[in-house]
Image 1 (cartoon, rainbow, N blue to C red):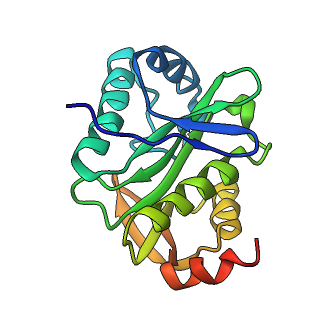
Image 2 (image 1 turned 30 degrees about the vertical axis):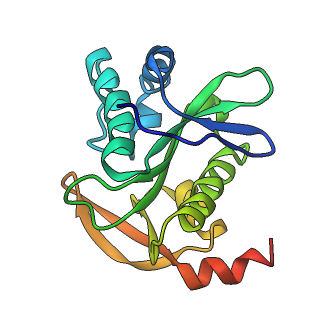
Length: 180
């Protein structure tokens, strides 16, 4: 049975369930080595890898009740990337993560999509803490984490790389609700 994946709408974006038509545009935007430089194993995926990634993001919803959304611009309906929650087996906790095609960098889309996912996560689940796992060289993602109210909590190893562990606790998130 297909998982029930909600659709989230922000000022400029729609976060919706991944489907077969998203595979090819997602694959195209992940062909840029700069887009992939801080993600996963840091490799540009093959077409099969991209298909498996989309299938995995859909499956994550079925197994965990949360996951990644396809991020689409409201104006024009173009796929710009993915955002949502990540927590595969062996992960240090529930992570809010995202990947955008280079063409959409610098527009605030990462923060907008990640904030929607974070708000949904705390609003719909009983998570105590949400993480962001960020390569120390990824200054843009560190800024996104800080805009979300996350603070540096340490570091860990993922995919044979040291990553910074930013996080926000439920109480911190609740305290920010009235200030936004």
